[in-house]
Structures are given as C-alpha cells and as structure tokens.
Image 1 (cartoon, rainbow, N blue to C red):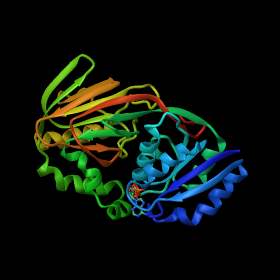
Image 2: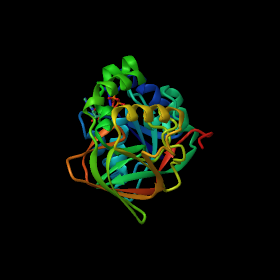
Image 3: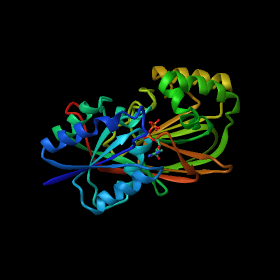
Image 4: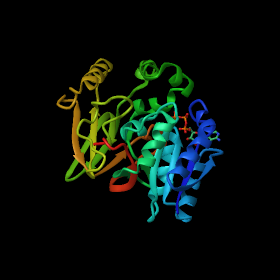
Length: 297
Ligand SMILES: Nc1ncnc2c1ncn2[C@@H]1O[C@H](COP(=O)(O)OP(=O)(O)OP(=O)(O)O)[C@@H](O)[C@H]1O
C-alpha cells in the first residue's frame, strides 16, 4: 500500500487546515493511501519531518502551510537521493509556490489534485546548501518579503507590499557585486538581482516571462544602479512586462550563477531570509516530482 505523509503547520494562515484534517485524511484513504500527519511545532520542524519521511520511504509527502512551510519541506527532500512525490496544500498568507504550480487555495480542491495523480518533474534551485523552488534574490528591496508583517498581508494582500515598498524606498542603496554566469562576469553596482525558476513571483506575473519550471534554466534579472525615480519607473515597467530591454536591466537565462559581494548582502529564498551571500545558484533539472493540475503547462 502507498503511504502519504502530511506535514502541516497548524499556525499557517487562519489555522484552517486543522479543522479540515480529518476530511483530508479520509479523502487520501479513499484514494488508496495509508495517510498520516505531522503537525510542525516550530521553525525548522518541517525540514526534519520531511527527512524522516524520506528515511521511512513514504511514497508521497504533502506540505500544508504557507511558503515558509513548503520551502522547509522542499529543503528536507531535495538533499536526499530518494525523493517522495510532493503534494502542496496552500494555507498560508502568501502562497507563491502554489500559485506557480497552479494549485488552488481551496483545501479540498488541492487534495483532489493529489488524488488525481497527475505529476510533473520540476526544477529546484540550490544555493550553497539551501533549496528554493520559485525565486532567489538579493538587494535591500528583496527584504520586503519578510519586512511585511503577515497580519498586514492577510488584511491588505498585494497592497501591503506596495505600502511597505514605498516606506523602504529611501533606504535602498546600490551594492557592488560580481556576478558570473556562463562565460560572462559582471562587476557593477546593482539595486537587486533575481534568480527565478518560475514566472509567478509575488503576483508579478510578467517579471520573468520566459521562466519555465522544467527546463533546467533560471531567468537571471539584474537591476543596475538607479536613482529612486528611475527605480519606481522600472517597477511600473515590470507590471506591464516592458522592463527586459531597459538599459538598466540585465536579463539572461542560465543554469548556474555565482554572486560575490563586497559588503554584507542578505539572500532571499522563496520570500524567506536565506542567510548571507556569496552564493552559487545551481538549477537542479527536474529534481522533484510534484502533483500538479492536469492542465498545468
Ligand atoms: N507550531 C508552530 N508555531 C509557530 N511557528 C511555526 C510552527 N510550525 C512552523 N512554524 C514556522 O512558521 C513559519 C511560517 O509558516 P508558513 O509559511 O507555513 O505560514 P504563514 O506565515 O501563514 O504563511 P506565509 O509564510 O506564506 O506568509 C514557518 O517558516 C515555520 O518555521
């Protein structure tokens, strides 16, 4: 019999998952799984729970939570040679990962996708010894994603980021970096860089238009030094997808990028703090098998 292990954060979002858990277990059992669940207790617990599920050779792991929990589960699985199939149940305040693979926010609908058993092998990004599925980046403004309190996100949604972004603008400074990819080396003062695996990043659907999650390539975007007015103008270009040929923007596709910095620069992984740079970003081709909707492209 196939076994499925649910790893869920009972504090995610509005704590809705706990109530639904018996129904989720039942649905999985009806689909032929022996299903069990682990509730996370603290930061890092979902990584350990995923490692244990690997040791115990579960066929399927299901991550239920926000981006933080899902990222932890991916970190627990990605480093192993045996990797169970991964299902996602998005119940966080931000759900970029689920949005990227078109998994709906409704709990039962997300379980249906797992039960339907349609899967795709998707790329996973690795930097130093950490993993990401959606996007990694550096530069002051990328700290936005964890500067915005989750209560503010719940109430205001996308608007919370704009408001916090405005507040942070005056503190954004360029940083001197050395970025190497393929046979190129760029030494520049930059505002930010992004290494993207998917085209669905914080609701900016046109940020990395070419990014596909199963082609072994990242979209690399670098924004060179600008003043605040130019910066705002380029953000508005991003909304329309007109930023790629701007002369302040460097854009390419590659499977490996190294970033070295002169000053301290934080690394952002899937919207969470990921330690400090330097880092080497490597695309692990089709590294994890995800349950996705049948119409996923
Ligand atoms: N029992 C727990 N109590 C408190 N924090 C927990 C618990 N279990 C896990 N966590 C931590 O909570 C963090 C945030 O969780 P998660 O991302 O699932 O939900 P969220 O904050 O509602 O959503 P999002 O991150 O999408 O805004 C995780 O990174 C995890 O380390």
